[in-house]
Image: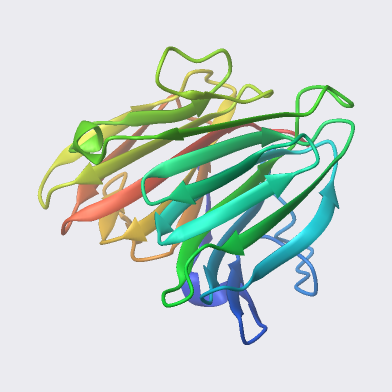
Length: 238
């Protein structure tokens, strides 16, 4: 098994007053030639947006964009005509394709919006843009992998135009699970939302740490305390 470790404190950081953003991979003014992507996973941003503030209308193209809401509310508007509010335990999946404009504004004036925004390289370029959003029951990820996003997914999950799967689990202390890859040629990136885990008996991950694992069909995880883990499985592109 090959492992790439990204400790939380090594991430890029941008502070804009209204926005605190941590970048696992090179993004905007943060550039590290050794941290451009993990396979098809290009961006993993951990954002804290002040009340009433946000990102004005801006463009994207040829990227699969997944937003996972952790706290608060985020209002989304786009050039496809969508105007939606994303709340805790909701996930948004968007194909930028041939090009879109969108805005993301904290819908509440008195509390921050906290979210993960993740970009994945698409399987094909210049597809028709699309948008989906869905709420996920946190009880269904209690000590069990809950599929959030996948290609041609079963009912209850969101679609992505790449052979990539996003799964989330809330583990009780002492519980042990395996993540089994859908494709043995893929890799999986584990991102710690909270808690502490041990991966494959020796790799310790704490809050906001990340690790990319490849060249293995399964990954073993043990919760050293109550923990929330996001697994992002992606093709291992060059």
